[in-house]
Length: 299
Image 1: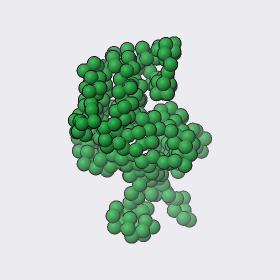
Image 2: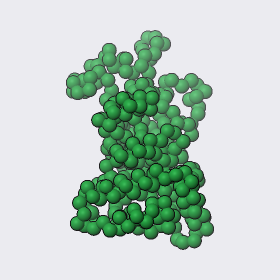
Image 3: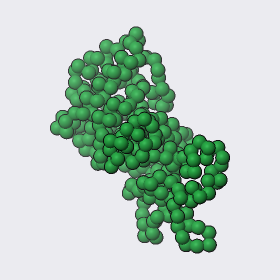
């Protein structure tokens, strides 16, 4: 499937017959929707039309956001896993826009809600410490993480404060995501061989990782998936993702409502630009369970 940020009104008849993974409706400059004016064939952008007709938004919207659409509506049909990513909060978005305007196109945040139309699979939020400690028994993961990081995690107790736990998780995740291509390739290749040969019984997460490896060979995101929750939404179930939370849409169809922004910080499962250091420094490192609920206490 193609990834497209174009609104359907921009597509000609031939393009409309093609499958698309992403369909935008909104006023962001990266993929503006168009309106055909009554009684003519003239097309104008939704943004310009709203600026001239702000009354259609209602007084409360205009008062808070001005004469522009404050959200971006998307329809997603995910056949190949999308990138491991996070969206910055407003302060970071403004900084990134100033520093890298060629990559980060606006100064807005991008909280989002996804409503599943089919079974929808997502990686989101760091796993609980209990699950993380289990992950760190996988030899191929330990090889990449390093014994020092493993010991730091295994030594976390109920008495450790939230900031100490966050610092340990950030150090571990940053080290993994920053590993050399050679080290990542070696670990992923060994993991694939183990899974294919079924040397041991595979966990659900290992089966997912094997599926991701077929799509993104030798990608650090394959290993990173061990540290994220594998959430499965049934049709009509929804998931909210706030700023600075890691996630990756894996498979299925959904509709999504997001703040008007095109800021995406990627670090894995993608051929696109990666900004590993920004992503690793911006995350909240909150642990959540497989229902996407934040866990504020050490288990």
